[in-house]
Length: 282
Image (tube, rainbow, N blue to C red; front, side, top):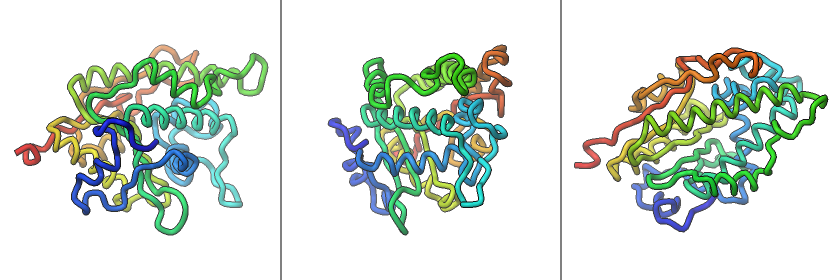
C-alpha cells in the first residue's frame, strides 16, 4: 500500500510536491496498516452508523439480511449487526482493491487524532497506469484466490445467496469497466474509492483527500474520473466540480438470477469527470 517504484506513484514525493496546506494530515497508508485501513473501509462502506456505500451494498445485499441502502442495526453493546458472510465478502474485495492500488496506484489516508487508525482512506490511480490481467491475478492471489461468494458448496448455508452475490459482482464490475472506458478514454486521475469513518464525516476530510487528487490532476492538465451510485453522491460530487458523463443501469432483466431488482437507483452506475482547472494550467 506504500509508494511504488514510479515517481508518478510515489505518494510521499507527490505529497511533498504540494503546499503544506494542501497536504496537511494526509499520509501514505503503509502495508502494515492494512487492518486499520480495513476497519475504516468497513465502517464507512458497510453501514456502521451511517448509510452504506450504494454500489457495495447492492452487490452484497443478498447476504446483508437488512434493508437495502440502509445502515446496519446497532446492538445493545454498540456494535453493528453484520452477518459474517456479508463481512467476509466485503473484506475479500477490500483486500483485493488495496493490493490492486498498491501495484498500480496509491493508498492515502488521514490518521485519527485521538487514537490508532484512520478517519479517512482513499484509493486512487495516476494517469498511465491500469489494472491488467497480471495485476488482477496478483491482487486476487493476495486476497485469497477464491472469493467467499464462490467458496460455498451447494446445500451449505447461504450458498444460494452467494450465487446471487456472484451474479451481482460479475454484472456490476463488468459495467464499471465499460463505464470507465467509455467515460474517460483520455489520460486521467482515477478516484477508485473514498471512505470516511462515520464518526469523522462532515468534517471536510473526504474533500481534503479529493482535493489532493484534483490538485495533482490540475497540475498535469488532465481530468479526474470516478464512478458512483445514487443521487445524493452524484449531487455531492457535482458540488466538487464533477459532471455526469453517462449513467448505466446494471443487471436489467436478471432479477431472478440476482434475487432482487436491477440496479437503477439514480439511473444506475454513474460515470463522473472533473475537468482540469484552467487556472492551474495557466
